[in-house]
Image (cartoon, rainbow, N blue to C red):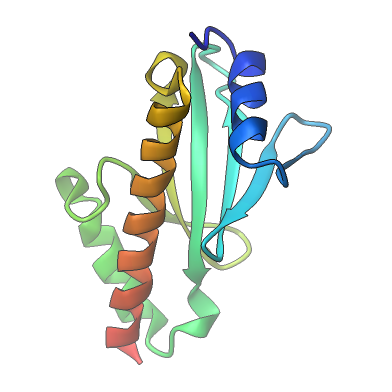
Length: 132
């Protein structure tokens, strides 16, 4: 069972052997052309922050309208599968969730989490096409 971020990191590296970890402990990898970033939760060592870059807002012709749609997607997590959409300083739209490590304790649970993120990010990529 995964009990800390180091155990979680080892499991993630088994599933995504091409992942990289920087000096701050942030792990990055790509699944289905979606960039993922995973970090230890600074205020709660029993959790991880999982983040997926959905797209760059500069790629959406009507980015303001799309950003308003994304903001409404956060209302009761409607359309975000429990995560939160936000804009990053790089003009990226990110899907972020704080997840307890004990919910990611084995390969099946971690794969399910990553599949859910990938699916939700893909849905928002499709929605962005409505704002072309």
